Image 1 (cartoon, rainbow, N blue to C red):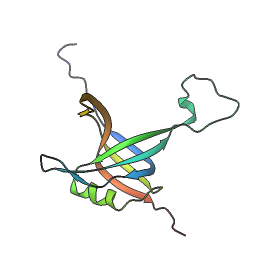
Image 2: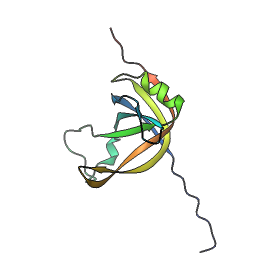
Image 3: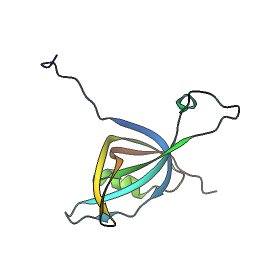
Image 4: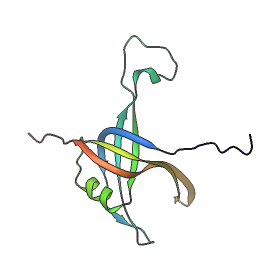
Length: 122
């Protein structure tokens, strides 16, 4: 068993509503990143307790998405709150310091981002 390679994937596909888009920022490395946050509804069967309540409620996850490539930053920069998007990418854990203490956060690093539906401005 030790000689067998176990196939592993870090693939994320999300479809959700944009709740916030940050301004692009340049890092000390010279790289640029633009982050956005999307809200994704959980399916009803993903209840934490396994029991269905008398009143169904919608549970959501709010997920941070980092756009590093020029193409994903361009798409993200044109989004507005409530647009519906699809994101393909990989889950990453980012380490940083906050208030002098080490911290980490998981986010999706987008390899592909596309608007599925724009918010109506009527």
